Image 1 (cartoon, rainbow, N blue to C red):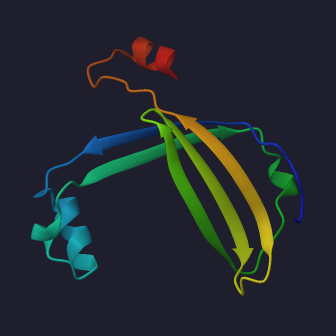
Image 2 (image 1 turned 135 degrees about the horizontal axis):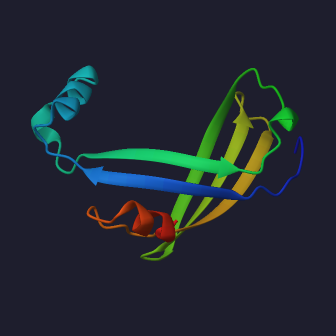
Length: 118
C-alpha cells in the first residue's frame, strides 16, 4: 500500500424518506431512463464528516476505482470495508475499515437534543 494510517472520522448522515411523486425523484428517474412509477422507497441522504486526516499526505492518483463491502452486525451497527484500486485493477492504493453506529434523531428534536445525539 502507498501508506498506512489510522483515521478517526465522525460522520453525521441524515436519511429522509421522500414521496415517489417528488419532482427530484421524477427528474432523477427520467435522467436515467427509468419509469418514475418504478420508484418504491425514494430517500434523500446528506452526509457531513470530520476527519483527523492530514490532507497534505494524500497521494495523487490519475485514475482509480472503488470497491466497498457493507454488512450489519446488528440493526444499529454497520461495518464497511473499502478498497481504492488502480484503474487497471492491478494494485490496491488504499484500504479502510469502518464501524458505524446508527443514532436515530427524531424530526422534532431541538438543536440541543440533536447535538447531544452526535
